[in-house]
Image 1 (cartoon, rainbow, N blue to C red):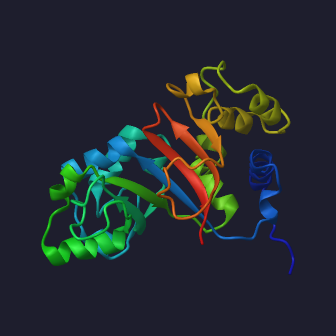
Image 2: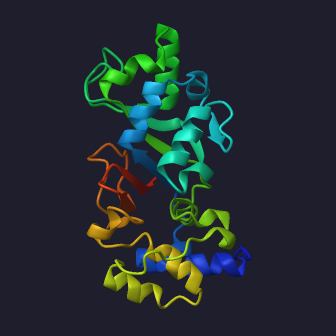
Amino acid sequence: MPEPVRSPWEESLAAAFSLVLERPVLEDTGEYAAWYSCSDLSSELFDAGFPLEPLAAGEVVGDPFASIPVLGKLFEGWDLFAPHWSIDLGASLFFGEDDELLPGREVEAAISGRELGTELIARKVKAKKLADAYPTVLFRVHTDGSLFGAIQALTGTHRGRDHLFPLDPEAGVRKRWNRRFAELDDSALADHLRNLFRTEDYARAYGAYHLGTDDPSHGYLPHPVTTAWRFGEAQAWSAVTSAS
């Protein structure tokens, strides 16, 4: 079977992602999932309340988030990339700090959005009633299932070259990643990615800190981490995992 023809932009991304993974990204034919979580955003989502039907139906929602507009507004306030993702609500995972999320379930067991929505509708319980359980959402970012597609989404490069961010400030990039990205032919892409490979101190205010294969979810992600990032004071993170 012939290899798919890729655009120069896709070739540039493949070269960059292969540097991140330290292996050729396009040679990996496995299935992968992309995830995003922000504890403060999760709290605000349940405090505001939202319709349960999109969860129960397993909807994939994206800009303008017509069926769950509060989510679109929160993404705009908390993240630069998230407002431009599509989110698989049914495959997203929900958990709380105690059994108030869904009484009768194991305390720390995550529940899928589809199951949570269905259960709450059946019990006639509104999402806002779960706010006291300190719920956290692991949003499943909808991608094509490839490793390339998952990293493309989480690095914000899925929107194309016209939506790359300049390196600002120029200081605060981890030295080894600064050197690695200097190998890329596309300097604008290199600077965009440098924002996501900052030192821990700089990442508290700018860009992100790359975690490698460390699990930022404290064990809630269902499969091993391939690559991950942490944002701010660790209140938000994103991760690529295997899908099974």
